Length: 410
Image 1 (tube, rainbow, N blue to C red):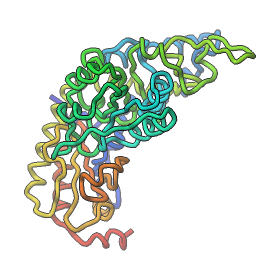
Image 2: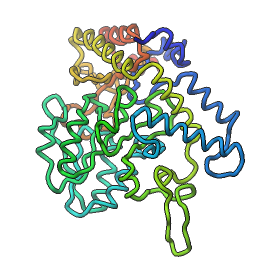
Image 3: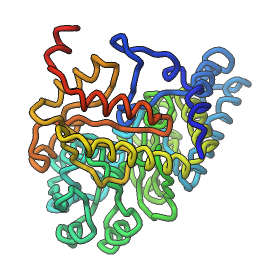
Image 4: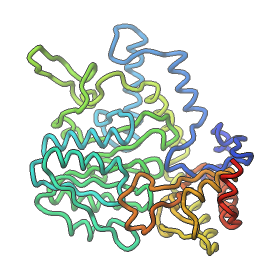
């Protein structure tokens, strides 16, 4: 059980912050999350006490930083149940998926091969596959969504074939918020001898994700969506696959040697994929964020968010002016519109009352036809969200109001 009052004290952004003259009610946690003091202090520690590069010097500061990075890999590996040498640090989910698309695509895709995604995917899990498919002459196919917008095993079977080489799907969609059955889908994908690439940006911060148990091939996630810093992310990949593919970034730190003929011998994974100076302060901050979440308990976080969602949905269902697009989703993502009001206008009105929600296409521009609307509002919860914040949000929707007032008052 989470002691919400004490937990909220850990976050400076949750203590007395105001927006538009109102108490801040932050409901955009699918976009980014607030950072606890322990993460902020860890980043400060890097810059004030232990600043050095990693694998770049034969002195104590550098050696100690090497040990810090290794310790962080072990913390990440423990969190998702993989090997430390399967943990690649990146700038975020977007970079991680691009790394996989390039690595798998250049190595294993041939003209006519198929990549399977869905129309619900974030741009970060669609555009890289479009690019590599165009480059290699492959074909991108789409899993049909069911009436609710879910991806089912039955529908996935309809688009799988002997030409399918890669299936790339979000564990939790960032708009509709449904949760994939990773293990069952992975079994299907592997029965076609294809690779299963999972976007975990909206799942890893909120629920237990077991890399080894699910047997997925790649998992990507971002630090800033799980109480960590911006600019740091992780790619988890099966070591044998990481060892077989090439990096798309080259430079200092990822090679053992090279010569004037252009011959390159790469380091072993994960360093093979970490060219240049990696975000050391970010890595330390991410490590501390993971430890913070582990202290709370990832199962407790998932349980808390489900309770908050049920609480919010029960209240929203009583409003006859609100359309909910994913009433039965399992995550803390609630996508909605107010009848007769454009999404950005509604978000601006809520902003004038101190309430932060996301509006627009949420980087999932292919989903508009399915939703039959050009834009939606999205409220996304996290474990530190309080019931009274949900009350303020629902009351604001219930009161309605002329959205033009929000513009005139700015």
